[in-house]
Image (tube, rainbow, N blue to C red):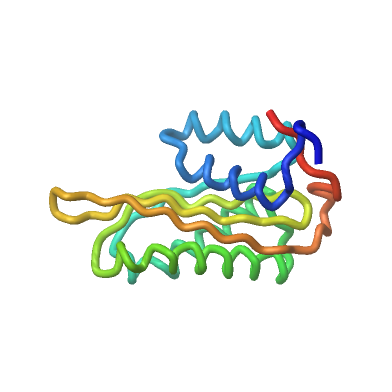
Length: 155
């Protein structure tokens, strides 16, 4: 690896975190454009509601958005990887979010065989709001040529 490149698993994790923590749709669009120039595809979706009751819809929205935006191919291994990574990232929030309302973004990023899901949420605790972050990585088959074996370029 050179100073110009980063390991693909780290690059997609960082990309997913950038998308999940974007403050606005405009910011999110700029990040997506920047990532695409580096060969990384990404998408983020907003969500909100009671943590426990919302997990299924959050996972489903992540899969639908990733498929719609071309982050993943519409094949079982890709959709399963998004579902698994999203569930894992959401499970990391349970200690802080269980029993409370949450609102935030779930983001998916992919470069070649590397896929990451990041979740950034605000947790409602009356007037003492908390924040939480979850992150998960999966390996997926590179069936659509979205990336190669080399590391993505740094910005």
